[in-house]
Length: 224
Ligand SMILES: Nc1ncnc2c1ncn2[C@@H]1O[C@H](COP(=O)(O)OP(=O)(O)OP(=O)(O)O)[C@@H](O)[C@H]1O
Image 1: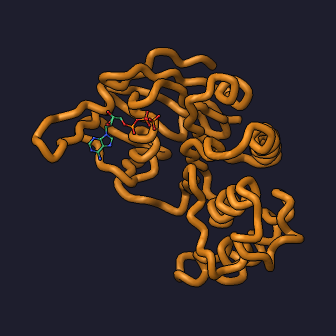
Image 2 (image 1 turned 90 degrees about the vertical axis):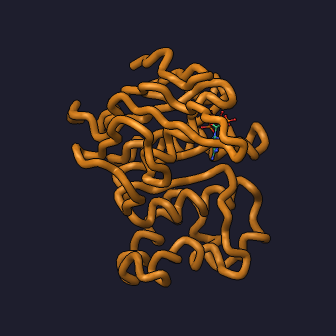
């Protein structure tokens, strides 16, 4: 594993202006290096800027100051090198599991053959191959979240950004998916950045643990 950072935040500040004109500093002067192939968890209290940091890396938000780099290049918009998974997988109810997973091919963002091949590989890996013709309403919450993860993996992104993906699940399903996700990470070469406010979850998953402080959000500790 190379130690060159894949993702770098350099003195990043992100301010939001509320409708009443108040300026909120969500992140203040945050610098962070994330190594290629690492599993990083971002842990911290509500409002400390975890989702903001993830969205900046995903190119979904524009920073106010500083630099957000992927492989040395500024990130300013979403890229297929980065996949995102949110708390709710937001699957399309009228599409089967497989059709949800391969939606990028229908949107012209990925070749059909490539998408189908990746769908075969990842559906097998997450144990959903036997469910590929089912509809989301026929699946449990944990299975739906696995479909969301598979949909993000079909692009074969270098980076997987996960924003509290297991928060809405029951404890047993959550434990099970944590183990599955760790296996998936160990079997591949993905860099994973995982947001949580659960200390046990952060400690179990992390190869690299970043603790953020609130108001304004800043890095309090980075344990490697
Ligand atoms: N679009 C926005 N407009 C105004 N303020 C925002 C916006 N998005 C986030 N904030 C503020 O930025 C701060 C950080 O929010 P963020 O969602 O990143 O925190 P978080 O650590 O992910 O919180 P949680 O754990 O509750 O999801 C909060 O004070 C929040 O109110």
